[in-house]
Length: 155
Image 1 (cartoon, helix red, strand yellow):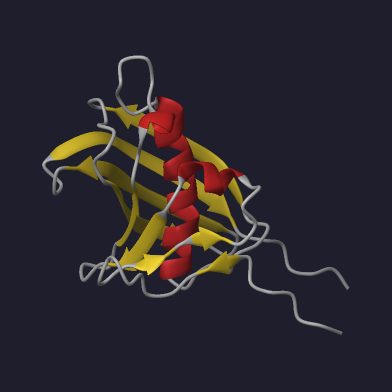
Image 2 (tube, rainbow, N blue to C red; image 1 turned 180 degrees about the vertical axis):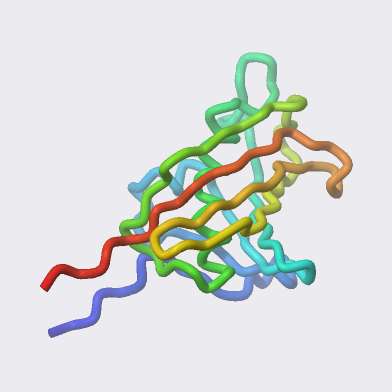
């Protein structure tokens, strides 16, 4: 029996001190569309993810496309759960994701997702956070979401 390589490539990012890469090994999957992503644990018990939106992530107003924001939020839920040590990469699923858009996101500026754990149960993770730019001065949206952890293996 051979061990499969991990689904994610993660480790210190040499270009962004204090951040780890959060890269899906399979470049044909959705995550690759969002481009380079980073993750780190914050001193306040939160997790933070970062992406670098470009023109391909914009709408016709040259602002961040809402679909890009929601995709990044969804991935950030899972990255944060991993940072918190609550989830291994694998077949967990998003049960809900509620987003309240507050202002437009900017392209060509780093986009950070700040995530906190509200509660963990046997099968569920309840999380919330904010999507931020300009060193946290610009709030793009607030969100909450629920992840269902993978089912235990059947015997």
